[in-house]
Length: 483
Image (cartoon, rainbow, N blue to C red; front, side, top):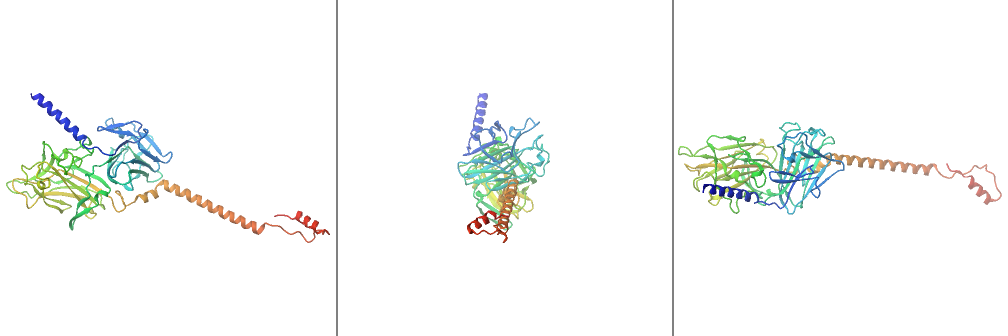
């Protein structure tokens, strides 16, 4: 009997996992293994080689595309990182999309060993539908080893698409540089992934921020608070969530909790596409001790680039309270009160273990220190012998600046005007124009010479006379000379 029950539970678990994996079916999904003539499989996902026929459109200058294959790559590295597409001049990929909306764009980079090319010469810009997403990028993070064998890097962006097409441009920074990419993902996001309204938090208080959905976003952090790393295989949107230990700065009075029951996703609430089970079934909490409410705030600090606005999404799921209506706490962003007396029970229609998230936006001044701090702690409504604060996950996304850039204060127009292709074209056109001017000057000079120095000269007065005037005229004509 026990074997049957165990078998049933195993079958149910497999069916449940399968149903989760197919719960999201994007309207558009392009998975491209760049520089490959064969297809690849990563985390049960099928990447198609861009050298295959009838695939995505790749446009570039003639002779500027190089297909590169890795030499002596580690055997456990995914196949998509064993080939690369290299561009010595400006190039672009085009992906047709069936409907407008937010699209996830993931770019994969791996500087592998190659005798044909030195990856230390890679430096390039990348734009997506007019937004600068990478500027003077070299294929690895700035604080990493610059060797060609550094590990793979994935940069993820959320771009609103209106025009029915996603255009990704790769532009070498200089004539001596090149661009490259190992794999590309373009996936239409769920419609509820990015809400249009958030709460703006600053030193002056809070206010409503609108127009979020049409901002270009770069995913900077996805943190699974209190839990282990979540890989793309365990996320319906194929995301990676990292543990929070690196960012947790205040730990006194907090503890990890794990929930083995079912996460209760509600209609109209957070979905598995907003956050997977493996994020919501772990958390860190602050609990009352010795019959009194704790006064400890849990705090995480995450380094960011200054000069940008940031979207901060906090994930909550009450997996620790014994009953509803017992959990109240405050949320602080960069030391400013962002939400007072949050009542998770009320927010989730009085259902325990039900996910909920809140979006905050911090302005340039709040992120000028190069750090974003997130804190949760007890409020004035917290009660004894209960959980006083909880947090399950943190997401931080950079928002484009006024120039439409996510990487530096440079616009796409500036990049294209400075790119080697444009410079070479400009030089050629200038030379052509200069030659035309020279030819025009030469023609004018020659015409003036013809007018002033060329013509019919009169014969000398000593020419013999002819009594026949007609004969004389004819003779004069025959002896006229042209100089």
